Amino acid sequence: MSGVRVLVGTRKGAFVLSSDGRREHWDVSGPHFAGWEIYHVKGSPAEPDRLFASQSNGWFGQVIQRSDDGGATWEPVGNKFSYEGEPGTHQWYDGTPHPWEFARVWHLEPSLDDPDTVYAGVEDAGLFRSTDGGQSWQELSALRCHPSAPSWQPGAGGMCLHTIILDPRAPGRMFAAISAAGAFRSDDAGETWKPVNRGLRSEGIPDADAEVGHCVHRLAMHPARPDVLYMQKHWDVMRSDDSGESWHEISGNLPTDFGFPIDVHAHDPDTVYVVPIKSDSEHFPPDGKLRVYRSRTGGDDWEALTRGLPQENCYVNVLRDAMAVDSLDSCGVYFGTTGGQVYASADAGDTWEPVVRDLPAVLSVEVQTLP
Amino acid sequence: MIRVVLPAHLRTLARVDSEVKLDVEGPATQRAVLDALEAGYPMLRGTIRDQATHQRRAFIRLYACQEDLSNESPDAPLPEAVAAGVEPLLVIGAMAGGSA
Image (cartoon, rainbow over all chains, first blue to last red; front, side, top):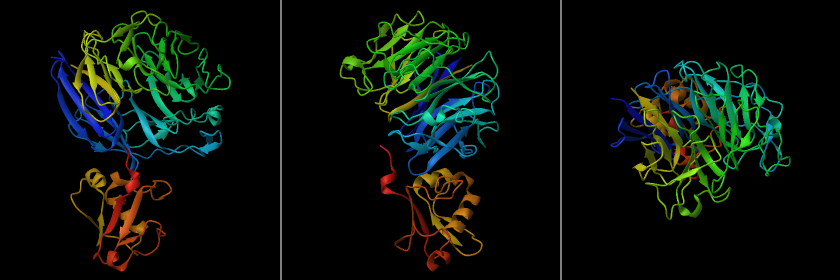
């Protein structure tokens, strides 16, 4: 029988939640790497038992772990992330030039077809690739060397490259998003990049329509319709129908269009999920009610999903990498909160149940659908 | 034989139960000990000092014989008791270095 494996990164370790295809009963393993911040854990689509985890903390820096048995055992692999050449400067919070400094790996994106190839999005914003299963890392420096890079400025969470999307239909096409620079696209496997932010409008920058400088929180794509991208921005939920060439707002009737995660139903490219939070300073759901919003129309028309979610006194956040979907017939949707809950819906969001309630703050959630 | 005591997280990472014993060629200095440590336990590269510059990470402290050696030159000789294996070199995660 098919099953799912939910990979959860938290402030104090990683957890693996496993269930069969019914998604009613869960085995919880962890904490793996107890005491370390686990920004992200993700499995290889080409070899699902191969997992990569980003492990870091303030004392000891960055470690990358790899499992080849679905998370039962792990081996540390390469952790040397050296920017290519002279790294140069970006803007610091006060507007002064600041040298590029590696802080941590935010996101790991395994190749769609090669289990030895994996991409890493790092803070300060840069993109790295390993072609030997994580043993060594080389920067794809064209992104960091984009002419606009000296003007990039960190968002509140740091200047992180947090989103990497590989286009399944166009080999070499990939998207990256950086807070607070914006979205970028490469059509040649990372050799060159162009900003793809036309249509974004951000009141927090001097030129609200600027080519770069937008605080993009998350991008999402449905693999069957890769020209359509969805974006949760610092404010505004956006959609592009032309691979990022232009964007239009789809916030519609959302109670607030601030938030972090955004994801797409596994079988319906027009069904999109967001978790609105009140504002840039109040990172919690409006009115203390944790509500996932679902649009079945590719945006603009949104419905609140509340069944099984706390509808009073709830003041958690859902971070940008902390939502995922499985691809079982009835699409499962999962998200983790800064309060340590991981909620799962086995019916595309109609009803929710907590899989676990008391983990450390959840930083990331990924799901693998297993045969 | 030089003895090194690692903090718990690095013992877990290196899969060692207690202190590490190292053969160090030449004069016993911080640099020589850390070179030998990283050669024997490659997974520790980057966790105590930067991989490129070899600068000590900000929240790592190096103690021995009730002294803080963190800011000594990496090429200064370690105390004789450490060089002789009587006292260990302690690698410490600084009290300020945790996260919430």
